[in-house]
Length: 298
Image 1 (tube, rainbow, N blue to C red):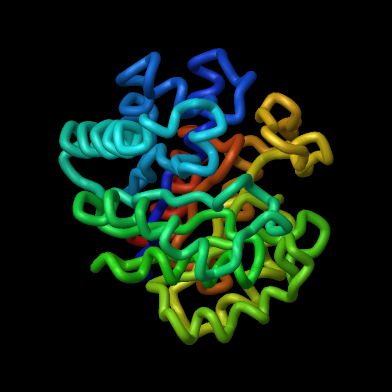
Image 2: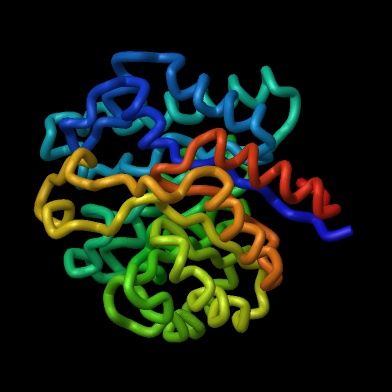
């Protein structure tokens, strides 16, 4: 029987929907500060839906995002809050793993502002150092260029926990990263740092197949978790964007999304889940399909 790891779905979008406040680049952080327990509830619903991993709500916690908003002194507190909310949900559920989320420096989908490796690595590393002792693995998410991948891995790999690399590809062409570089150009970085898994994330599901055709050639566990946005708009690529400028697709409900996820599994993926604009219902449908098809969810 094949074993599949089922990730949770989107965290930030679920928080935005429930908190009702997205008019800020750091809306998911505001929720932890102003509505403690909300993130725990989202984690709990994903566990109940069948997810076996809770991804901490720490994706945007970097000094270069917090400091301009006058929140630099909240850096350690926000990481602690993200850990506690995930730990509490797992304890209540009685099983599961925790993935410490590390998002890109600067902004999502902006490889053009990515600092060089020697600058980036210690910045990723300071997040990893706090998360690592209390998580089962670290996941560097929405990595959009080769340099960004190396900076993230160089910073995260030194802290004693498995590291997963999740890369975001063009919504128009799954064979290239959002930087325009071929996905295959990651091969040297992957061989150098040897992450425990390589995934494609936060791109439209239609392009994931082409990305995975290349990623599976790295001979590591691989998988995908796509978003449900129509596309990443030009407005979101401006400085300090808020998520309300992005439009959710009306044609990507749980059944439609699960069709994609099961196709990735058919390609050999052993890690699947959801990203932005997917929720507990999407994960529950994937779990139902996997179990009906004879897979063991681990």
